[in-house]
Image (tube, rainbow, N blue to C red):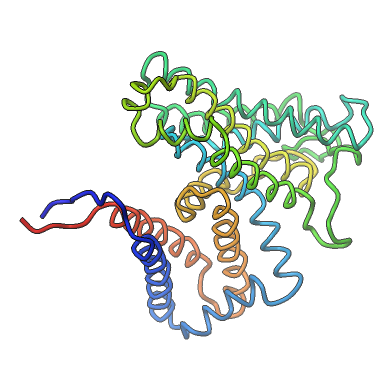
Length: 349
């Protein structure tokens, strides 16, 4: 057997195969719930109820989805140009670091100026973090998968050093955390008494802006061309290396906004557990969305709903929350297979 490219996949093929991947994921999760001794319908029902069964649950899902939208967009933008950014975690922490360093009183600006300034500077920090692997790639041909992945560990160790040293809160009772942001540097809550903040609104705006860039600008056209065929794009006169650098700057900036929103909107300070792996989960979000910026929002809500719902389900039914991790890993593998079968058909020889 061999794989034969499909020149123009039909809409039905492009839609049904990803849908089948999600449906198969649900079936596998149901079987695992049965193995754990639980009613699969009850388990799935509790996940849905825990994710969207009340106003509090729904807002918690939106809250969890906020950083996933940013990291999903960062990965989708980079992957569209075949720049394999695996370092969104480092870029997230870079954005959070700048937010905390400058948002604890270093900038004497009113709130309406301070928040946009912190967001822009956080984006610049994330862009610089990804710019280094991008330059290594275009100048020396260094594999960006390796460099961006290693940057995650390097940056986490760097953050740990800072939190045990110059950034450590003297009033933190010995815990490795930074001082808290001043009130003017905090993103306001959308609803009083609940944790959802305006970082979610910023994430929706970012998704729309990225969609416009990809579909309505020259840069978006060049990114798609480079991703489809780098050699052909270069032959057509597209400056491939320049496009990769611009893509890296945009991708790193988007990932850094996740750190800005978490530090400014939710946590209020910087700790080593600011992100439980949002950068890595963003890869799953981007792949589930088929790299579509608007679909990233839906994919992030789906992933966040599974995590939030799994916590509630575990308390109600007694099934471990690891079921959520299995569901997401299965969904990613099946979605990759669905994408392959969308673009290729299996032919018997």
